[in-house]
Image (cartoon, rainbow, N blue to C red):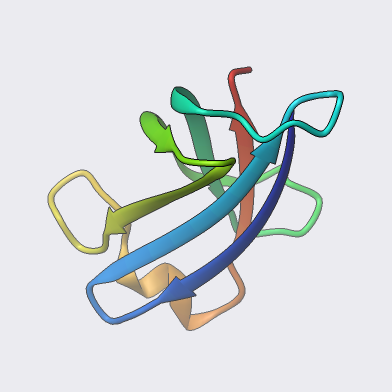
Length: 91
């Protein structure tokens, strides 16, 4: 699947919006497993955080909101410098 993505962060949440199509360019529908990984480096060698979530897609569009600062979640201090995002849909 081919993801295109945008991201936004606030003080307490990180929202990641993606659009996914299959190999033929057809938008995916319904729930799909999405792995979101945050890295501290552009090469993706230093993982800060990673989770696989079920995301509902409508005409290929889906959104994930990750809470910043919750116990065991995303550390807000990471955003004091660059954070890089990797997404994988259905593996």
